[in-house]
Structures are given as structure tokens and as C-alpha cells.
Amino acid sequence: MPLFLFFTVCAVLMLGYPVALALAGTALIFAGLGHLLLQMGVPVPFEARMMGAMPNRLYGIMTNQTLLAVPLFVLMGVLLEKSRVAETLLDAMALLFGTLRGGLGISVILVGMLLAASTGIVGATVVTMGLLSLPTMLKRGYSPALATGSICATGTLGQIIPPSIALVLLGDVLSNAYQRAQLAMGVWSPKTVSVGDLFVGALIPGLLLVVAYILYMMIVAWLKPESAPAADRDVLKQELGQTGSILPLLIKGLIPPVLLIVAVLGSILGGFATPTEASAVGATGAFLLALANRRLNIPMLRKVVFTTTKVTSMVFLILIGAALFSLVFRAYGGEELVKEMFEALPGGVVGATLVVMLVIFLLGFILDFIEITFVVVPIVGPVLLMMGLDPIWLGIMIAVNLQTSFLTPPFGFALFYLRGVTPESVPTSAIYRGVVPFILMQLGMLGALALFPGLATWLPSVLR
Image 1 (cartoon, one colour):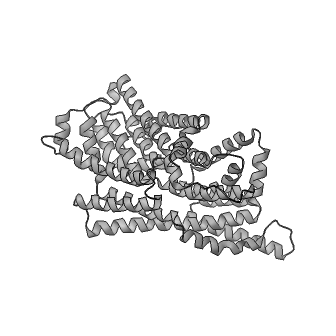
Image 2: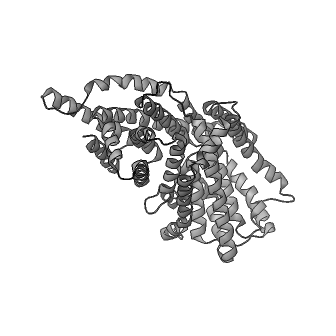
Image 3: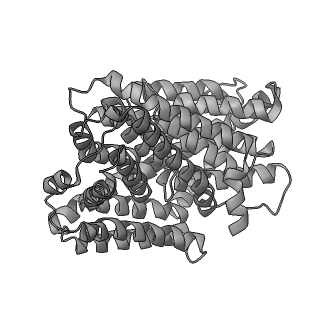
């Protein structure tokens, strides 16, 4: 029954029903079925009394201080997007690096990294970078495959570069799973893992991926100059409407967003603020940046608030549906079933981890990171953590795994986002070819994390 419940939810989602309603509706149907069968005297393994915990779960979701960071980080990202901070930043970086072979591609990667750190939303980063940079790269003679591949890859950095909304949600779920795992093992004074720990743990893998992307761009520009040609600075300045020194544009475009990200991450790493408090710093800073750029007005503010409310409502509605789903799954004995299945797998904890990573990778084709975080991780997380895995390492592995899944043809979400804003002259096959090297780099990062867990766990242990 637990497995049938899980596969039924996946089937309903693939039919196109809203995620939150699919989770809650399917769970309620199975709960009603279990209760009905018990009333009829059929011996089904369903503990109906567990459903009484639902009100407490709802109250816990709505009063969770960690989840308060979600609307504030969304507000920060939407403000930066609507106030065209990314556009100014891209212009500044293009003038700085555009005269080098592959320089425009390096600019796109660096701006995409900063934008990913600012918005934390894959779709927003990919669409924004596609609209802003793709026409310029194609006009400058860049290979369509290289241009689209680099934009897609840097867009998915929103999964791993903090302050990522994916890490905020994943950190909250893993924190609960870690406590449950320790209590199940008889540890009555459980250790904790926080969203801040995941932020710190993601820094080294995220920056290593950025370095790998830049090195790849430089190698391609060196081996195939026609795929990533240099641009003339005077022509670039003329196109961007710049006269004289580029220093004012660099100061205006580069320094404010970098200072904002440093303020958000620095307050967390320095122990001055929790991720929730840092999200308030980020939202306030984005508001001031929009005000300084003279782009803040009532119509724009109305759009920003509407988008933030819409995204936040979606996240919390999915949270409620996922809470109900996981409760019914556990009422049918699903957690014990998963534990038995993992223990029966060959290879012990290594075999179980490989299976979970493969399942999450495949689910990334049909589900967004929010659904996977709230549906799959609460099921497999406690069991894996009981087998001795480090929660920070597991969280970073899941984040990088999902990042790779969102980039992999033919179903990767990032590919769909970019296809929607790509000119018809660029074939879909070019996008698919372009992302292959970046997928290999991300798989290499997964392998490096598996072989050297310290890449994710060392920095948090130092800063604790």
C-alpha cells in the first residue's frame, strides 16, 4: 500500500494536476480507503490514529521560523529581476571581459552565478539570462550550442549557490529527518543541522563548479576560436550607449549586487544572523538597490508583491499537501518498508545511497525540487541518516543531483525554460548538445563529493 500510494501520486502528477492538490487529494483518498477497510474488518496495516497529528503538523508549518526565509528570499530575487540589476551587471561584465576570446561567455557565467545567488530560483535565472545574454552571444558569433549550454548550466547554479531557496527547504526537511533518525536510534539528546550549515557546505562545491565552467569556456575559446570570438570594446561601448571610461558602469553594475550577496552570506557565515534574519537583510538591500536605480514605482512594486505572494503560497500549499502525504505514508507503515528495502539492498549504505540518488535523478525529470524535497526526502532521509550518513553531505549531494537532473535532456526543466525564450533559428538539438559537457562536470562533482565528503563537511565543521 505505501508503494502503491507513492506511484499513484507520481501518476497523478504526470497527468498534470496541481502538485499540492495531487499530494493532499491522493493521501486523503488512501486514508479514507484504509479507514473504510478497517471498519469492514479487513486487516490492513493502517494506523488511523496517526491522522490526529495533522493539526499539529499544520501549526508547525505555519509557525516555522526557518520557512519565513522563503518569502523574503523570493522577494529579494524578484526585486533584483524587476529592477533590471542583472541587465546592468551583465553590461558591466561584458565590457570588462568581452574583448577576450570567450570573455562574453565568462561574463555570462559570472553574472549567472551572482544572479543565481540572488534569486535562488532556477527558472528565473535561466529565463533572465536567456533574454539578456543569448541574443548578444549569438550576434557576437558564439556557437549556439556553447551559448545555450552555458546559460542553462549557470541557471541551475540556483540549486547549489547560497542563499538558495532549494537549500532553505532542504535544510528544514533534513533537520527534521535527522532528529527523527537519532530518536529512532535511541539518542535522546539529538544533534541538529541547520539551513546555515547547508549554506556553508554548498559554498566549496558551488564555487568549484563555477571555476570548472569558466575553465571549460577558456579551453573551448582556445581550441575553437570561432565558437567564442572576442568582441571589439568600442563596438560594445557603442551598442551599450557608453562613452568614456567604463569605471562608472562597473561601479554601478558590479559592486551593489556583490555587496548585497556578501552582506547576506557574511551575516550567516559570521554568526551575526540566522538564514531567516539574513533573508530580511537581502530583501531590504534589494529594495534599496531598486530605489537607487530609480526603477522602483507603484506598478512595479505591485508586480513584485504579487509574484512573491504567488510563489510563497505555492510553496506553503505544497508543504501542507506533502505533510498530509507523508503522514498517510507512515500510517501505512511506509517508513518501515523503506528501511527494510534499503537494508536488503546489496552494498549496504553505499548501495542504498546509489539507489536513492538514481531515483531522485529520474524524478527530477517530472517533479520540481519542491515536490522532491517534501515528498521523497522525508521518506528516505531518516533511513539513510540512521545508516550513518552525514546530513550536510547528504543535503549537498541531493542538491547537486537535482541540479544535474534539471540540466539533462530530454526532460530537464532548465532546457524547457530556455527553449521558451530561444529564437526559432536555434534548434533544440543545439541546446541538448551544449549542456552535455556541463552535465559531465556536474557528474564529476557528484563523484568528487562521494570520494571526498570533506568538500561539503569541512567548512561547516570549521565555522561551527
